[in-house]
Length: 115
Length: 113
Image 1 (cartoon, chains in turn orange, red):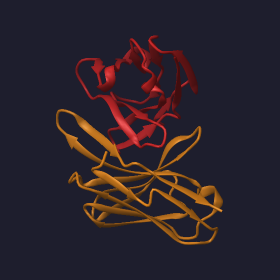
Image 2 (image 1 turned 90 degrees about the horizontal axis):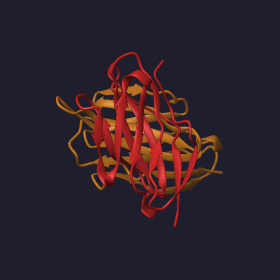
Image 3 (image 1 turned 120 degrees about the horizontal axis):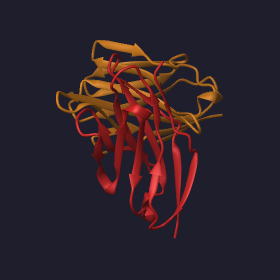
Image 4 (image 1 turned 90 degrees about the vertical axis):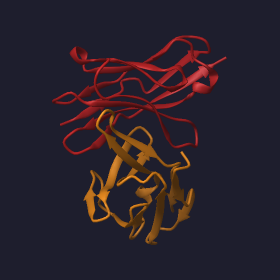
């Protein structure tokens, strides 16, 4: 879905380096999420934000930090990358409607390799 | 704790055959339920969701799913699979208290001509 974009799409970095993954959305949604996907484990939530002033840890936040620069932008940082952070990272946004509940919309993903 | 189980890691079907992907959930109340599809190298696309009302939900690409409360299941079905349906499929449950999604581990579908 082009309404949620992630940059970069692919990244190789070395152990110990700081890296930032960026997410932008044009959907006008308040809620944004960062997930990582590992083979056989599905998607696991790293951080989420319900609005610009609201940041919450997910189930696997250790080693990560986030910044919600604006309603449309939500960045994920690895302060000191380690090899087991090699994964596919997804950003998502969501809306909630009275008749349809909440639906999350995903970006195309960023594939990160930490050497 | 809420959880989602997709018991089949990998399924192979012939093109034109029917398909059913299983999903079971554990949740204390009526859940939101979702099916997403991830094509190779792509992000996740929403196929369908159950929020309330009719327990048989129609989605995109000819997919449907049925919510069965008594079995805690939300199985995905398609009457005739196309080669382009080869992908990984994720079931998810929405937690009404936290507004977070809990994903299953996925089922990889392979389609043979």
